[in-house]
Length: 142
Image 1 (cartoon, rainbow, N blue to C red):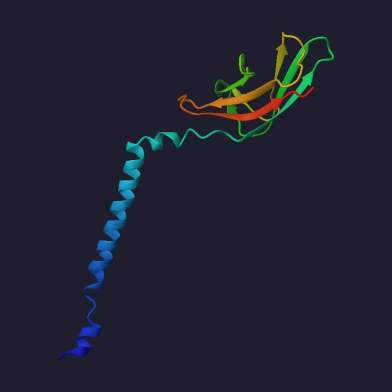
Image 2: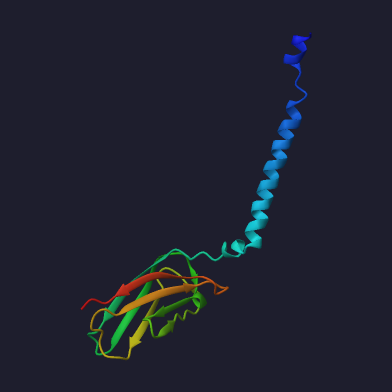
């Protein structure tokens, strides 16, 4: 019996490692292909931007006006942003097509002065239209 040869033989190690690596590669490829087949890969680029907005309401000048200012965060394509009160949508008009920190939007409120409880939202919608997110919400408290 050749006991020394049994302990020094290492030919079987290489094929086992090869099989393990092939199985791992197959599992990873199946996961990636499955993600795109199920449509989950389309949503990767549709993540909402990170941005902060502030609101300022002025009712002293005789006309009601709500000013929304982009305080900080990502620059956002203006076509993706609307300000809504639940019934009316206001677009954001910038000359350079990007809303950046420091840019603001004033909305003239033609109805009666805010009485309390009215909520305005800055809403972002993805380019494909499949995702949307409220970036900031403001509620007037009388």
